Structure formats: C-alpha cells, structure tokens
Length: 115
Image 1 (cartoon, rainbow, N blue to C red):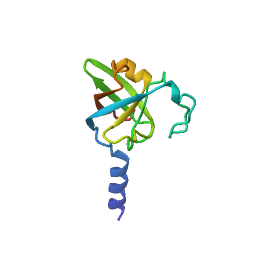
Image 2: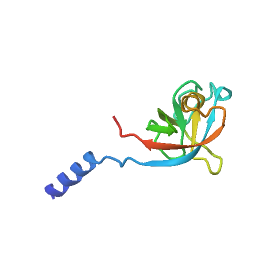
Image 3: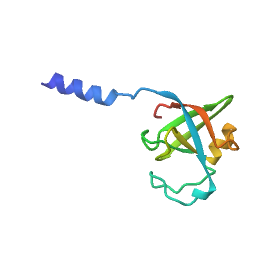
Image 4: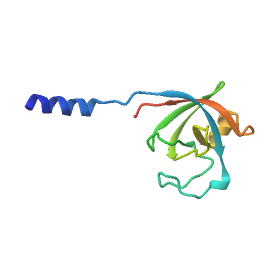
C-alpha cells in the first residue's frame, strides 16, 4: 500500500497538462466594456493584454498569432457567447495583432505552459 500511495502522489504532483493549440475565429471588445468586472473578478480595461475564452482556466497565458503578428495574453473572462467564435480579445490585443479595424478574424491560439 505504501508503494501505491507513493506512486499516486508522484503522479499527481508531476502531471503537466498538455500544451494545446487551435485556429479559431476571434472578435474584440473595447472601451464600452471598461470598468465592468470580468469572470476572474478583475475590472476589464481595453488597453490590457487579456482575452475571454469559454473553457480555458482563468489566468491561463496564450500565444495568439495573426499573420506575422504575435502576442501573449492572459485569460481573465468567459466568452465569446456568439456561435462560431472561439476567442474574444481586448482592443489592445486586436490592435497589436493588426485586426482592430476588421472586427473578426481567424487567429492561431496556443496555450502556454504554466510558469
């Protein structure tokens, strides 16, 4: 029984979730949402590098790529709740990725390992 307990403890403490990636349709939200609380409890600010995702754990860092542009952002909210969209990004993220004037675009999202 001691060997089994040691195995279970070792397995649980060394588990690292797999790094995943996907290409999704993304939209952005901006200043109209400033001051509103996010699902994480922090107040939204359109100039911060944050995103909303339906299922990724809050606090997860993601690498988002659009063409030659890349940015690292943090999941701090839930959404999008519009069918066919996989990610809502702050205005700052959209600007940095070069799609602020499009509204919607396809982006590649990669979950980064925990630090």
